[in-house]
Length: 234
Image 1: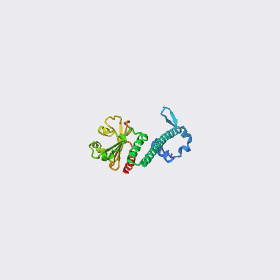
Image 2: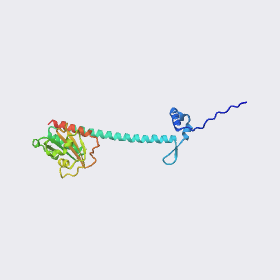
Image 3: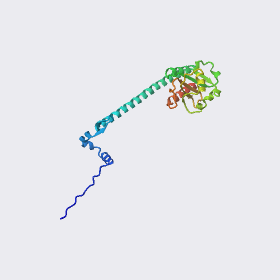
Image 4: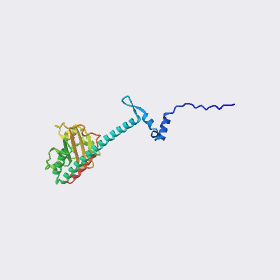
C-alpha cells in the first residue's frame, strides 16, 4: 500500500514590490476590507501612531493649506498687476493730453514720483542742449549730446537690448543724480527707442533691493516704449 506524499511549499515572505503591485492592480481592496483599513497604524511626527485614514486626512489638509497659500500669492500678484495697469493707464492719458514737450516732461516726472514711488528720476534726452534752453522742469530733464564724454560710463547699457536694474557705478550716479547725492541704493535705466535712440530714463531708489538684476523688466520695457512714443511727437 502506497501513501501519497503531501507537497511541501516553501514559506517565502511576500515582497514589498508584490504588495505594491497587488494594491495598484486592486485599487478597491481597502473598500472591500474597511476594517483592515481602519486598523492600520502609521508612525506620526509626534512619536506616536495614527491610522491610515488619519494620515490621508492630514496629507489632504497639508495640500489644501499649500494650495490656499499659492492661491493667495496668485491673487496678490493679480492685484499688483491690476494696480500697475491702472497707473500705466493714468500716465498714458496724461501724456496724450500733454500739448508740448514741457508739459510731457512735467506729467512724466509727477507720475513717476506720485504713482510709482520714485525717490529720484531723470530723463536723459539725446540732442543739442541749446535747443532745449526754454524747457525748465528742474533736475528731471537732462538734454545731452549723444557723443558727450560723460556718456562713456553708460556704453554697456546703451549698446544693450533693454532695461538694466541694480546698483550703479559712481560715475553713472554722479552724472544722473549729482555728486552730492548719496541716497541712491539701486536704480533702473530704461532705454527710449530702439538702441536708446532718443535717450534713456533713470529711476533711483534709496532701497538697495528695489531694483535688482533678477527682477522682471517687462513693466520697465513698456514704460520705455510709452515714453519714447510720447517724445516722438515733439
